[in-house]
Length: 413
Ligand SMILES: Cc1ncc(COP(=O)(O)O)c(C=O)c1O
Image: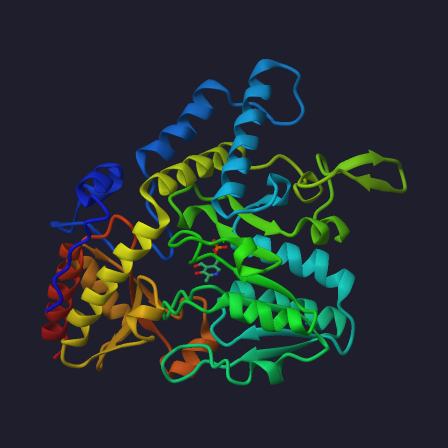
């Protein structure tokens, strides 16, 4: 069996940073294996949130008094940290949204409605989360544009052999996920972006599962938009990011109208504030944005490469242990091409029943279609059970999962 050693991460020290992990569930130590849905938060982030609400809660960009200036300064500092984290050219390219879903809807509505016309094509993939599918369906219906799809092959990877046929002069946008939340597949975004650029298409990347888990450099990838969520990367809920190339964002009309996003308002017309404010109508999630800045500090200090390496080692170990269970099928490609997400099914037992039995043993996993119904149809499984890992996940938690699965098998056999 693979010897599992993660010398690059001090697991005991990392776990000490996450208060929620130290509890019993149904008489067992909690094994939280659902970080793909939402990650846990280190004390540093929780403290940053309470510190904001206790010491300097005030609205931003408005007041001339000290608390408001302090809140504004802290929020803008968070924007700088996030820009550095993904290697954006400027913090003005960082738009605060609620989550990945809202970031993609922003592009679909603001860019899509202004730029798409009948006959234009949008290229997606068959492994997209509903967040990177439904907004494009809505915009395609509204504008007359058509959707195309990069297929998924039998190993759960994008079948890119026909990419150059799928990309035509009518393709205006390629929108793909960086990492599948069902299969763990990490897609070759730089190569896809290069092919897209050759036909003049823009590239949007759904980074919900990549930005939290490995280094994402928007300039090196050669992309135009990146969407991600704070709550999946040790940050608070209610805060997400859209990064966009400045020239494209500047040319786009606003998404939502209201306070903060305007320059001048008259009764019948208005002009827009400069970036990033043009896309941040109304009072933002101030404390949550500040908290996300601290989450970025935390992840950066540990190191994204170390996190990725540790997750891959743990995934190799987990795959080996799960594949050894008779009657259990795992999905997705070889470990070199994936991150720490493993979907599986146990013969003759519904995914929800598996998850319910695992919960009885303290193991928290997700079951269902994972907001990827078209992909589930391709896999031929209406639902899977999914275990997912993060920087705080231990090999012992994987062992706890395996023991609970054996119990589950015994119950249903
Ligand atoms: C790949 C992917 N895209 C988008 C989303 C949507 O994220 P949110 O619900 O934070 O908007 C998720 C959430 O699980 C995801 O895994």
